[in-house]
Every structure is written in structure tokens, then in C-alpha cells.
Amino acid sequence: QGTTHGIIARYRDWLPIDPAAKVITLGEGNTPLVAAENLSDRLGGEVWLKVEGANPTGSFKDRGMTVAVTAALHEGATAVVCASTGNTSASASAYAAKAGLLPIVLLPAGRIAAGKLAQAIVHGAKVVQIDGNFDDCLGLAQKLADHYPVSLVNSVNRIRLEGQKTAAFEIVDLLGDAPDIHAMPVGNGGNLPAYWRGYVEYADAGRATRRPRMWGFQAAGAAPLVLGHPVLNPETVATAIRVGNPASTALAVAARDESGGLFEAVPDDQILAAQQYLAAREGVFVEPASATGVAGLLAKAERGELESGLRIVITVTGNGLKDVDTALSGHAALTGQTIGSAPVVPAALAEVAAV
Ligand code: F0G
Image 1: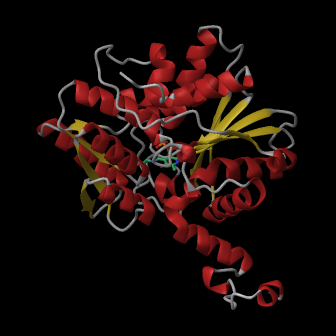
Image 2 (image 1 turned 180 degrees about the horizontal axis):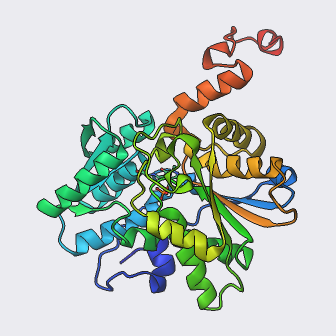
């Protein structure tokens, strides 16, 4: 293939890829696992951040999309469709462009971070804004794929989860075993069971001696998995996980139960505080939704619900540059600082030193 990088090249034996398929890759995966020393102190354990914002389009979605678009192209598709809160559409658009397929993306009107919308537009997607929420968009995307010759690349297309499980492989390959706890944000519910599958497959193959407890965190205003029923009008500043009726509810609940894990909800102000903390203390700039796992663990530690001495991996799912507006207003709320509050001085040493 001439393909020397990306998760399919690295983990092909673990993925359902036809040997004859042309691999569509942008070099996804192999993302940093960062030792989070400040967070380790605060949580009383050994904490690692799996920084998925370092993927080619800035989120974990690329791991699933290389597999989904490779399969769609091999099966003869000419167009792919997805519903998205932003990251799936950015990823689908980039991989479809690389494959020469037309990306079609259905987005909840006015509820997508600007960076993600820019990605879809610049990669040449046919962008349709729906007067509704993500759940409405997903229903429409499924119907489009049922009635028209377009391939659905949402995670209801289970091949996506096969690609996403490779993040768990990378963690075990690096740490030598699975952690005690794996925490992450949960929206449509696909990524948590994808990691679980990866951990289970590695343990079954003897590559890990154990499996982690899977801890999923949702925004309080969009927490159907915590409540145990769909939320009609999900609301959260973390737009990426503004999902009221997760398509992968059954898989996510099974992964929680099999792993002895949990789902918990976190209020928006704690999500934004965790986003600022990660940036200011760990050097990792993530989008709001991506800080939800960290926020959830901080809340549990504060309530005395976190044993000490655990090895914890937290997936931070997307890059902070996708949504600078929310990051800056969150920062302004905490510190009063804005872009405008940075002084402008003449280009002279004395003036700069005086600031
Ligand atoms: N974090 C980010 C940054 C996301 O974009 C998403 C999902 C999640 C976490 C939750 O993952 O859905 O597998 O439980 N974003 C989807 C999208 C809904 O359309 O981009 P999940």
C-alpha cells in the first residue's frame, strides 16, 4: 500500500480490513500518553492523559474514520454521510476528501463550534444544518443511508468502534498493562465500549493481565446514561457531547457493567474549570467536552470517592483549538483576562520590560 503509518498499518491483525482494500489514512493514532503530575497529586494516584486531540483532524474520531472510510471505498461507495456535534463531521470530511468521496454532514444548526464547522466546509463537505439537535440529525442520516446510495459513517456503523479500540491497545503497549481505571467523556456512547473491546481483546490474547473499570462522565444537562432514560432537550456548554438519546446506549451500559464501572454527571462550570486546569497546569489544551472525564474524577476525589494509589488513564478526546470562543470566555470568567486585555506597546525594550 505504501502505507507505513496510521492505526491500520499498526494494528491490521486486530481489525476487520479486507486485505485487498486500499487503506485511507492520514497518519492517525500513536497519540501522546502524557504523565499528568499535578493531576496525580490532586487525585492521589498515577494519572495519564491520552491526548486524542493530537490526531490529524484533532479528535479521536480519526481512529474510527480511517477504518470506516477504507471500508466504504472498498465497498464501492461514492459518498459518505454522518450526523455530528462537530468532530465526526470534521473527521469524515477529511477522510472522505482523501479517498475522493463526497462527504455529507448533518449538523444541529447553530450548535457547532466554529473550528469544527470550518473543517467540514474547507474539506469540501456538503453541509446541511438541521433545525433540531444531534439526535434528530442522526435519525435523518440513518434514513438517508437507508434510501440513498450513501454510506453511513456514524458509530452506529460498528466498524468505527473497531478503529477506536486501538487507543486501548496503544495504552497497554506503552504502560505494559491496563490501568485500574479508564475515564472519559461520553456522548453518543460509542467510544467507551470501543476502548472496553480493545482492553478485553488484549487481555484475552495475554497482552494484558487485567482490564480496567470503565468510568464514563456526561454533562449534567445531557446525561441520559446517568439518568437511565433519554433526555428530550439536552443542554450543555460542552457541545460535542450534547446528545440526549445515545445510539450506543446498550453497548455503553454493557461495558460499564462488565468492567464494574460507572456513569456520572458533571455540571458545566466544573467542566470548564477542568478545561482551564488542564491548560494551565498540565499544558494540555482540550475542548470543553474533552475535560469532562477530568472534571468527573476531580469531583469524585473531592467527595472522597476515589481510592488512592490507583493508576488512572483519562482520554481527553478533542483539541482545544476547535472551540477557542468557549475557552476564552471560560478563561475570562476565571481570571478577567481576554485577548483584548493583553497590552499593546511600542516595539522598544524598555516599554516591553515595563509591562
Ligand atoms: N468528546 C468529544 C470531543 C466528542 O466529539 C465526542 C462525540 C465525545 C467525547 C463522546 O464520544 O459519542 O463516542 O460517546 N462526538 C460525536 C460527534 C457525537 O458527532 O462528533 P461518544
